[in-house]
Length: 323
Figure 1 (cartoon, rainbow, N blue to C red):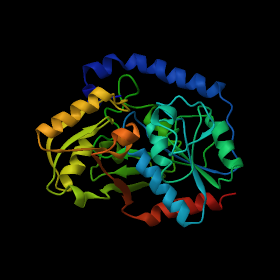
Figure 2: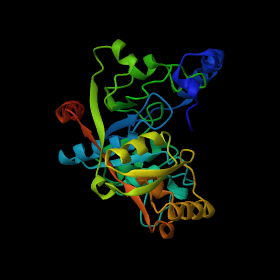
Figure 3: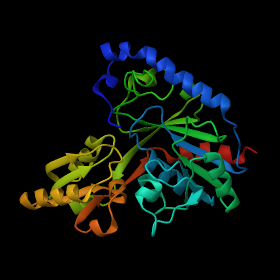
Figure 4: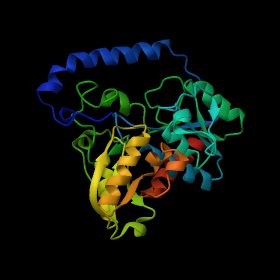
């Protein structure tokens, strides 16, 4: 969903909707009490966030996978499969599954490593373990009580922070900051900003700084492009394109996880041709396009780089050595 403007400031609407936040919190509490928590028998790492929206969980999950892989750990991804019809547990096959089947994020993750989707994430975690996983990386799920996590990271976009700090619907928070902080081993802060909430963090919660780096930026230097995306914060995509020298002559934003229709793609191609521009989108958006419709559409690949990778490795090693 696209974040409303009032989520960024503690104004009239934020205060007026605050009583409804209590209902959200009560619902989450009831869900937690009714859920049986279980551990799959292998290490579980969770990459989540405090807020609704695109903080950068997927590139963070991929970076975490590579770190574990270099340590000799066979990690599998686990996702609910948002936007897909598959109930699971189901092992994602990037050659045959579509975003309509499993969701765009799991489909993207499956190009890196074994990925499972399961509405019942506890069952999905056990299935992955039984299939040979040494560790599980949950893409999202910080607020999901069904799986006991060994290590949880909260990903924060430094430009957005936690917005006005209020819980849905008064703000973007999925739970109170205090509740979220009690669950995490570290915050992964993406970008150069310093959101105000950092000033009051307890010393027990380290902040690992990271940045999103384009992988194939040289391909876009000087190119005229029409950028389109259906992600939570398309401005971040536009900024990345400008950073690598692309000339964005037009942009079209869709809702997060938008399923592109043939007429929309035809319209985009016509507009790009009229502007003498190339179509470019994100890797995640490409997953929602039929394979036959991807010709002539470029993607800007990204990866996450940590300022101090040794900090992440230290946390992981401590988790792996514990039990």
